Length: 131
Image (cartoon, rainbow, N blue to C red; front, side):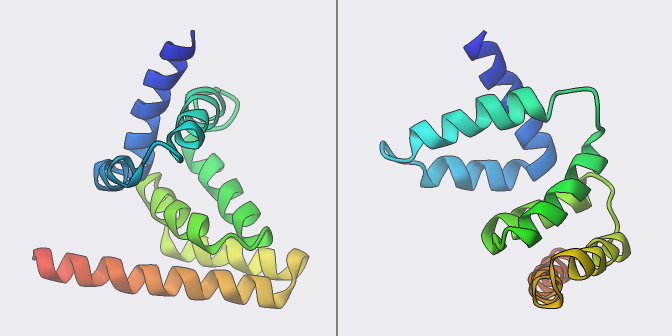
């Protein structure tokens, strides 16, 4: 079953985060970090993200709020991109961060907004370069 969870996790992870992110993550993995990566792929992606109770779009919105409130800017950046891949709009992402500001504090919402703004600029630059 572990191998099944891992394979499912890799599939979902690639669909949500995109093949470029997954390739970069694999390339950056070494002997020390592989156990954590495999744990996350099996349990987070292969189990929780595969559950039918929430769609991927809803899971992305939850992640944006949680990662903002937990002050995890590196993961937040990854999951902002994932949220966009899952159909969450930039405007909706902004609304999530307003909600975060209300319940977790304005500095927290502001920091999350800054992370998103920088990522949006990166994505816009990538789009212009590819056009």
